Image (tube, rainbow, N blue to C red; front, side):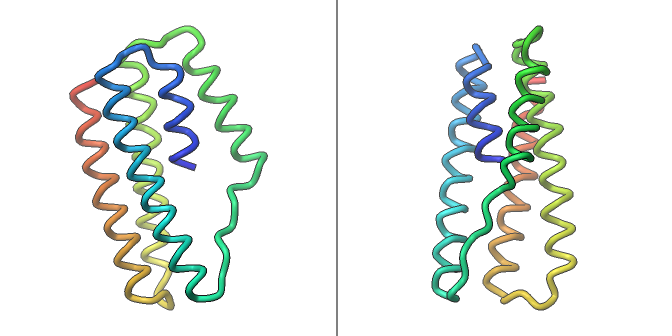
Length: 126
């Protein structure tokens, strides 16, 4: 979800410095997704896609929120809010996943730490 939303926001943001920051973030999301898919495949499982309706709602939300204000500060605020939602969701998942493998928990905790760093990095754009 974060990967798709961040890619869409990049298309709406005219600020090159913020776009570069978001591109690095998107690359990291792609790398994490790839690692997670490989681990799932090694365990004989498949990643579940984000439900299409959820993706569509996020897409429309981004379009609406950037239609009248594409300023660096506004887009950074949208990304900051989204990143914080991700932090909450990841933390909740980690706390509820006592049966997950240690490698999976570590991957999620690393992503959680990275998300916290992304949120901190977005502050300079607010």
